[in-house]
Amino acid sequence: MAHRIELARSSRSSCQSCWQGIARDEPRLAEEFVSSRTRTVAYRFHHLECAADLRPLVLRSALGSCELPLPQRDDLERRIAAALERERSRRVGRPPIREGRGDDLEEVLLARLAQDPDDAEALLVFADLLQGRGEPRGELIVLQHELRCLGADPERRGQLLRRQTELLDRHAQALVPPVSHGDRIEWRDGFIHRVELCGRSGSRLADAPELLAHPSLRLLAELRVAFFMAPDGPAAVQALVAGAPATIRELELGDSFEHPLGPVPALLRRLPRLERLTLLGRTELDALAHPTLARLALSDLDWSYEGGAVAALIRLDPGRLPGLRELKIGGSQETDALCRALGERGWLGQLSRLDLSGGTMTRTGAEALAEWTGRLAWLDVTGNRLTPSCRKLLEPRCERLVFGWQQGEGQEGWYVRHRRRPEWGRGRVVRELEGKLEIEFEGAGRKVLKADAPYLESL
Image (cartoon, rainbow, N blue to C red; front, side, top):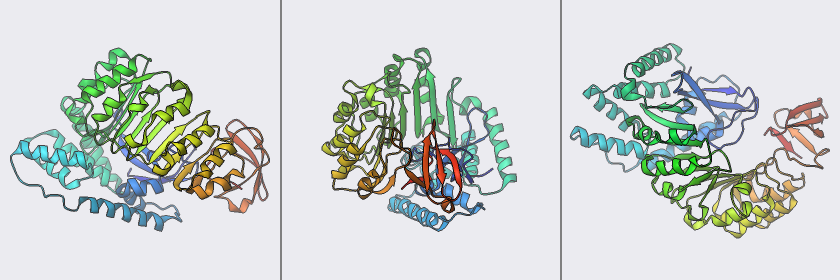
């Protein structure tokens, strides 16, 4: 099957572009990739709007075969065209590929692909070069690139997948890196695009340098490392400092606030193209610096750092992260104080997107944000302790406000509407259940819906 647009069958999936949940019955992009475990097709999901901005060619392919009614189709086409135009503008002035000796040309092509993984010209020239040498990776590049760009042609897709499986089985020693049980890899255009090293203990961390040095990881773009025990974090990060590919653009470290992460600042200095960073654990936030990092996600700051979330935020210096535009601080018990600290530290003036979901924000925090005179492009306050009246305080401070459901006492009796079922009319929240809301709608009676469903809008 090709990339496709489908209705989400549950509320459990998350967008791989913006971190946010995808509601049940919401149209989503299912982006196809090849599973490292089964070597069969698997999918990762995106909001359609996010895909238009970040995966324009993939979304265009899926739109071509989509039969679902999409009211926003014209807007998606405009966003796809704008994203492709930005990419063309970025490529203006790029020097043409010059013929040369094989080794020199290979380095030139790899450098171009490291700079731009979507450079199809460099990719296919590189595939020709490898096929001329009889190297199996050349054919694998052509196969996977065609799979990624292929439209609705089940017969051709089946042929390509069978040939891919045969190629990987026959040349496993040269193409497949030495992954351990529980690890996960994703292929893209003949190279490993994403690696997840999950539950690594100290003994298994010793294998990480060998894995990262494998030729199939020369264009690695995304890396996630989770640790089995607290002492393993610093060892893992130190191993990455020694051997992480400089092509990494997205990095996720840790899986528990109790675990120290070690020398993360030193690791960032090795990753000049890093754009997205997620940290769950303790590190030297005051030394965190990177010129191009655009998105930072921090979780459980209250427990990870002495002094709590505000003390942790104070350690972060906006001047050391000049490119940062998106910040997520999830699950904090000090959200009100964080709102004021974000303004005092100058972060609100630098950011375009702010995610404070799952915290404890009350009207005090909303008033602190409202005092700021600027305007965010996007603000998510889902799952805090805000009353409906706080919505009016926050709306002038952002172009798009994700208010969602709110927790805590005093929420019963507030009103919502279902954006996909306007005929239901206004709904009154009768009671809050575990993760759900019982709502009485004027035109549909009582319904029990997911509390975090994005289609529920507070009134």
